[in-house]
Every structure is written in structure tokens, then in C-alpha cells.
Amino acid sequence: MTDTVSLDTIALDRRHVWHPFTQAQTAPEPLAVTHGKGVSLFTEDGREILDLISSWWVNLHGHAHPAIAGAIAEQAHRLEQVIFADFTHSPAARLAARLAEVLPGGLGRVFYSDNGSTAVEVALKLAWQYWRNQGEGQRRRFLAFEGSYHGDTFGAMAAGVGSGFYAPFQELLFAVDRMPYPATWDGDPEVEAKEAAALDWLDRWLAANGAELVAVIIEPLVQGASGMRFCRPEFLRAMAARVRAAGGLVIFDEVMTGFGRTGALFASQKAGVAPDLICLSKGLTGGFLPLSVTACGASIYEAFLGAGFDRAFAHGHSFTANPLGCAAALASLDLTTSAETTANLARIEARHRAAIADLSSHPKLSRGRVIGTIAAIEVTDAQGYTAAVGQTLKRFFLERGLLLRPLGPVIYLLPPYCVTDGQLDRAYAAIRDAADTLL
Image 1 (spheres, helix red, strand yellow):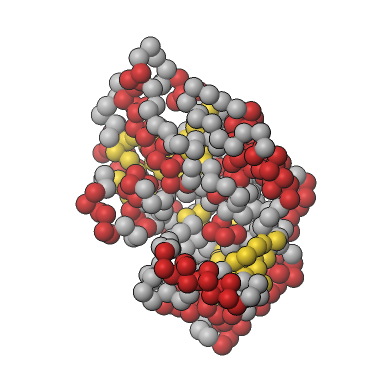
Image 2: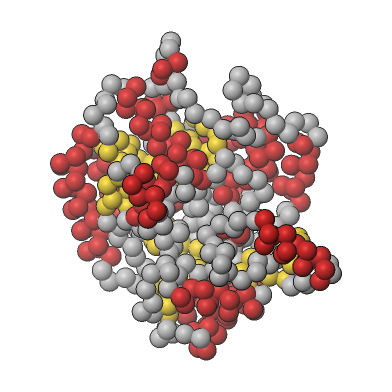
């Protein structure tokens, strides 16, 4: 590509495009990407950048994977889209059946939508209407966690208000109670005390409000956007047991943690907890197309059956169960459940553990943690998502051909499963170089 083409792309972008999570007045010019292959992104000005965050956590198997691209192309020649009210099609039916086979706890009913945020909206609305269809209209309270993030539509914002991203919209959001989150890391000496305190808070809240609880929603094992904050499976199990004893529903937002990110196909399986509702997106299509799923079991589905439409779930999207997205998801699921991917998940986790243990010995780095293909470490004594060090580090890594996008002071890796040991070593070396020369 020539410099002229690159300048034209940037000029058009600057004139017409509004980018997400960006202050346009101060942001540097975006990079114009022409194509990708495997872990690499290639820009119009000739750079190769290793995508070590899977392009906002969506890409599982590498960019432009031929198996997924081929499935989309084949489907596009047969059926690109059809209204999903009153109609169905083979890719949607087959994908729902495949998901029912692999999801935990009999979650055999699949509702399709477009992205992670809409999957969460569906789950919250299903939970709310479920109790009304059951004649339990006194259940009016949702419970979420401090630091949680569930998306940017209004219901998802209400559930994720503890993330701190939504100040301009606070007065428009419905009330959600927030419980403490016992964030932990490798070698954390206070984890049991933090878990006990959180569960004590929950016990007291349930004693006072349990009969009003609609559902609890949590990102199982890993809070993503608030800084790759981990909790232990033991806590997740204890929390879910208490909520269920009070009659509430358990919603797992596995938009990021699903499809192998935690080392198991789903974080719920790794934790040994089957939720009542699960939200899936991001890696669902291997990063190729927008698609999401909210799945539940028979008891919730059957509560919406009846002679009148008033019991039905009146919710939908224009591109619900888009055939191209479903075809991509089927191809991606084949890859995700293959022996090669299973081996890669174990290899990446082992590589992460050795590197994070080494990096944690650096005085400028602390609170290292690893689960599956997710590795995170923090800049010692830096505070908060808006910490300036995050932007400084992002530029530092990009100059070295690495797409690493720290969450404030939290440096993390969440690579595609095709990443090589050599590519990972480049990232680890850059983190150490940053700690030695920049921090």
C-alpha cells in the first residue's frame, strides 16, 4: 500500500468516524489495518503488529482463519439473512443444538441476539419476566458486583455501574445492589478473608432482601474490563449456593470467558457451577461476525409458554440468528473443541505461568495472575483505570509491534490460540523492558 492510500483512509476516518472509548480531541491518529493473518495485523504503512489481546477479546483462532472464512463464504451463497420470527434455518438450529451439548447444567434453550451487551439485556429481561410469569412480582431487585462490566446498553449499564464507566447516565439506570468482589492474584495471602467478608455481606443482604431477589449477575472467575480481576472457583460456588437457597436466579456473563479463555470451554465448567442463564458472544464466531446467545434451561423456557402472548418474550433484533454468523460459530466451535486447540490452551497457560512468575519478581510489577490463556500483572502502586501509565505503556508496546492495551495499570495478555511461544516471549520481554526503562 502507498502512503497516499494510508493518508486517504486516515483523512476519511478523521472526517467521518466516531471511535469507541476514545477522546477524539486528544487521541493519536488510528492505525489503518489492511489485513490480518494468524496473530498478525498488517497496516497500510507497512507495519506488522502482533494482536495479543485478540482484537478486544473476540478472535480465538487467528485472523482470517480459512475454515471460518470458508464457512461464511459457503453460507453466503445459500442464505445471507432471513427474519427469525416465524422462520428458522439450518445453521441456527444446528448451532443451538451444538451449544446445548456443550453448555453445563442442561442449558438447552438458546435465544439469539447481536453482541455481549444485548445478550445481557436478554438475560436480565428473561429473569425479570420469569418471576412475573410465575406470579412472584415482589422480586424486584438485581444483585451485581463491585467492578463488574456487562456492556453499554441501559440494562447492562445498570448491572455494571460498579465499573465506574457510566456517570453521565446514572440518573437513567434502574437500581442494582452491588456486593463486594474478592479480587485475588497468585500468592494472595488475604484471599480467604476477602471471600469470607464478601459472603458475610451476601448473607446479611439475603436475610433482609432474599425474597425480593430476581437474579445475581457475575462475570465468572474474571472481571474483564475493570482490570482482569480474578476470583476463585470456591467463592463462585459458595455465592451461587446462597443465591439459590434464597430462590434467586444465577446469571453468568461469559461474553469474554467463554470458548476456552479460562482453560475450560466455559468458566462455569472450570468453577463447577451451572448457572440458570448464560450470556455468550465475542469468541462465539471466532471473531468474524457479531452474534450472541443467551441460554437457559427448560424450567425458565416453559415459564413463558401459554395460550396468550402476554406470557411470551417480546424481544428481538433485526439480525437475530443471522445465518452467516451461525455458520461462522459452527466452524469456530469445531476448531475450539479440536485436539489441537486443547493442546494450545494448555501450552499457552503453562507459558504464561512461567513468565508471570518471573515478571512478578520485578519491583515495579506485582499481583501477577494467570487463568487459562489470560495473564495479567499490575504496575506497582499505580491506581485506577484512568492511570496515565496505561496510555504510556500502550504506546511503548505499539512502537515494538505489539498490540497490548493495558487496563489502566494492569498489563494483560489474551492472545489467539494460534500464538507461538516465540510471539509470547516477545511480549514478556517487552513487559520486562517497560518495567526496566519506563516505570
